[in-house]
Length: 280
Image (cartoon, rainbow, N blue to C red; front, top):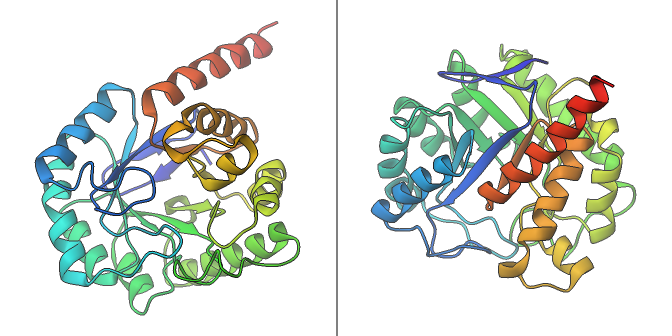
């Protein structure tokens, strides 16, 4: 697929796209509380764009392991002021939410993408997306829910289970009239999976790509990187960049990251090498 269809943009997928994370939450696992003021969040959006982000992903509810759900009105109060301004910045704006009420509100403001860790399984979510003429959607695999997912991770070979799930929810969504070009997949690194399962999903990413949906990789600062390096969450920039490059090398078209500047630079090196491979 050459592009990802979103509300206002056809996001090109001929080169990897970097999605900058904007958490407007007090309790996200990595940067909770740093950007929960609207002015600080908008400044962070602008900084990520200066650093080279191609898309922004705004979230108002933490999905870290053990995190409690946030009431609809609280999430709306966190997200809407930022989305209202971010859609004026000239890049695709994604909103990380599982609530149909939030989805509808941000799409009404012009948001381009719904990024849902629940893969639109909440009642009414599919209908909101299907009713929109062109918004993009990222469907993610999550085992169980944020409160219990790491207390009892999935068992067995994660790759066929994730593939089967994403194929089914995509078929269901396409049955409601959503075109394939609007759909991207996220394997859900860290969402109810063991360290070994997370790395198997990365190593065997080609199996997830086989049905033809673009892959979004979300490895940034995840606990599996801490497990193999021993580094705390605020020191995982280098392994996060390494994981992003490895994901792109294995075919991911979008990487969702905290460290935009460093990831963009690493991918520029990767791209330069590939161009020489193509022109011996």
